[in-house]
Length: 87
Image (cartoon, rainbow, N blue to C red; front, side):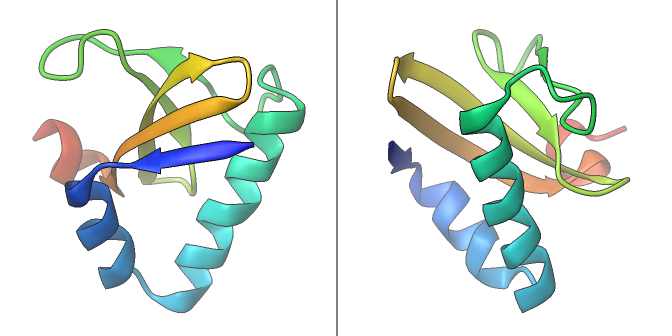
């Protein structure tokens, strides 16, 4: 599996506490194996992230991504719901 990372995602990920970074890795592994897992709450997004999807990392943290190919994902952003969507 290959994960492309946007520079914004890289910066946001580095600022996360180590436990949250581990949770992001766990959820990405879960996404790869079972996209329909209810813990992920995988869903499409509207503006400003049209054509992207979101998964839950924790109760408030989300990861914005796009599936490019069968084995390639592009990670766009990670943060709280408010940080990403402003609400």
